[in-house]
Length: 126
Image (cartoon, one colour):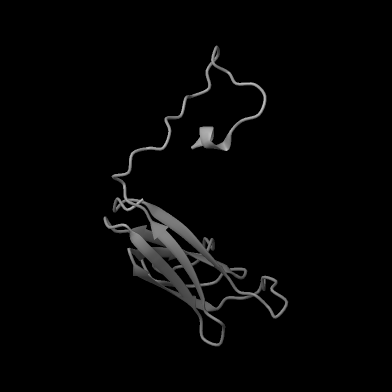
């Protein structure tokens, strides 16, 4: 949601030629966001890592790292690109939606007395 508060986790993995995660990879990965968002910080799951969490780059740990991307108050396209020297870069394209849109449907909590039976329409869940 383009509300200036939502954050999305974007994962990056170091892959071999067969598309498998390299569990010993510790490559430095840089993240960049363009459009309706920005890189809030990064992580890798390594409790002994002393890199700043508020950086746009992170060394992979066991072949993985991640970026937290925030959104602005404006709806629109958001692209997050992960790059690492010597590796093929990857870009994820997201869309930040306006928060002024009316909810599509009100969700009813399940309580004793209004339990549903049979099949559930996925639209009831959102």
